[in-house]
Length: 285
Image (tube, rainbow, N blue to C red; front, side, top):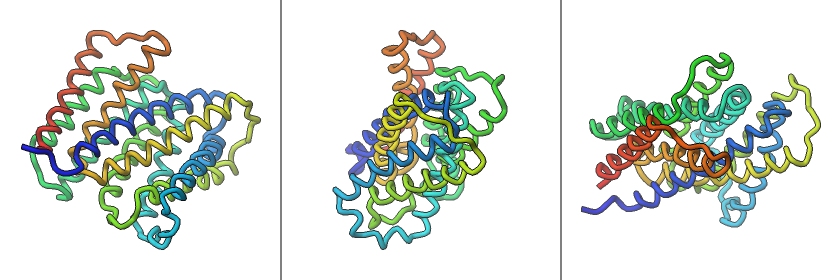
């Protein structure tokens, strides 16, 4: 049997998007030590908008600007704002591992919502894949619950926003270019960040912080672009389990950068994450 057309490409895009997001979170975490949430959203958003503008111009997407009037493009932009804002706040108060653990409930929420709302055909194995992947994530990260409430709440809001964003992305009309959708969503973030600055103090940023946010912007923009392509190239329940590969990227970054090695429980979690991906591939056939 063969896979549906585009499913392999969609899965590859999802894996690449997760790698970009790990790098983005790492750079943002480095910058949150001295900068406010609004400041980070504005600076990183400005860099990211520049990157996406270049990509959109190169693809000729600006010639079809009339298509961004679709309500779902606006909805996705709003969800991009809530996702970015809540993730920055969460990263400022919690370790990256704990924030990632909370955000990784998003695939399960997206699959559950798509099945309950009958947006996709119900298959028990799809739900099983999401649950197995979620269990693996919890074993890998072994999240704690004794951190500040603001960070915990922000990470949960981020997870809900991610799930809703995925579902909206899946419903976007095919005639709207993915790069144009990504450009609109990216532009919305610094605009929202500017509003937050009215209640925050702008602190001077050194070259290191600017470099971190510039690198984070590139990673976030490319990750967003790849994620949109993944979600539009296959059903949410097919590509959603591969969102869990963000854990593998995070583990690799920890080992290369700080010599961190997962314990036996985490290794079991990695096997469960791989199992969920194998289930999803089998369903996609």
